[in-house]
Image (cartoon, rainbow, N blue to C red):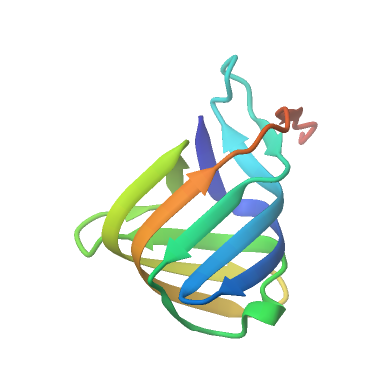
Length: 122
């Protein structure tokens, strides 16, 4: 199962000390449990020991693009669950024009218990 940054919907960003949490309202998923595509509500992406550029309070809504980089490779998708020691850099562009850049020592993604919702995109 893979998280696709583009077309995912972020509900909000939360700051907890030096950790930045992105809570997704609808994370775009490819190759779900039965090979289907869809949306997963409640996915959380955590950036630990993080520094960021951009206003977390403005980080909500649809992502136009997103990329995670370890300095060598760039990923527009993440295999779930994900737990990667860093350093990492993520760059996210929201549909309303805001950009968020995060440098973190660890990135984790947890899907929670919500079921995958099918995509009806044509």
